[in-house]
Amino acid sequence: MSNKYSEHSKADSAPTNPNERKKFRKGKRTFKEIKMRPNIDKNDFNTKLKQIVKFLEKSLQVRITVSIRGRQNIFKAEGLALFDKISEATKDIGTMDSNVKQAGANYMRTINPISKKKNK
Image 1: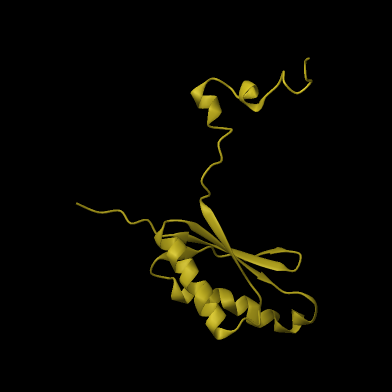
Image 2: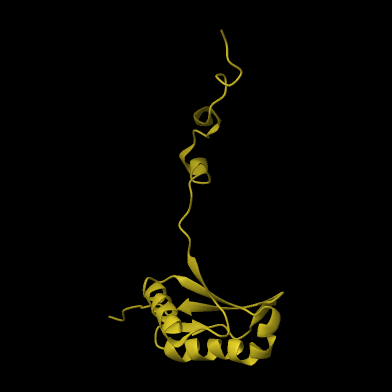
C-alpha cells in the first residue's frame, strides 16, 4: 500500500550541488542583540556591558535596543544616555554608529568591532 507521504521526503528535495546546499544550511549569525530598558539597574547594566564586550572581542557586531514604553517616556533621556555610557565603555574595542534608529518605542544603535590587523 502506498502512502501519500512516502513519495516525497526532505532529502529528495534538497539540491545535489554542494554550492546550492549551502543555502539550506543555517548560517552563523554575525551580530548579537542586547535589549535594555531606560530604568535598568546598575548591576544589570554592568552584566549587559560585559556581554557586549565579550561579543565584540569575538568580532561580532552588537545591536543595542532600548525599549521605552508607556510611563517610561519620562525617562527617554536616560534611555538615550545608555548609548553614551556603552560607547564610552567600549571605545577601545568597538565603534558605535552615529545615528540612533527609532522603530516605534524602540531605539537602536549598532557597535562594530575594531578589526585587529597585525602590521609586520
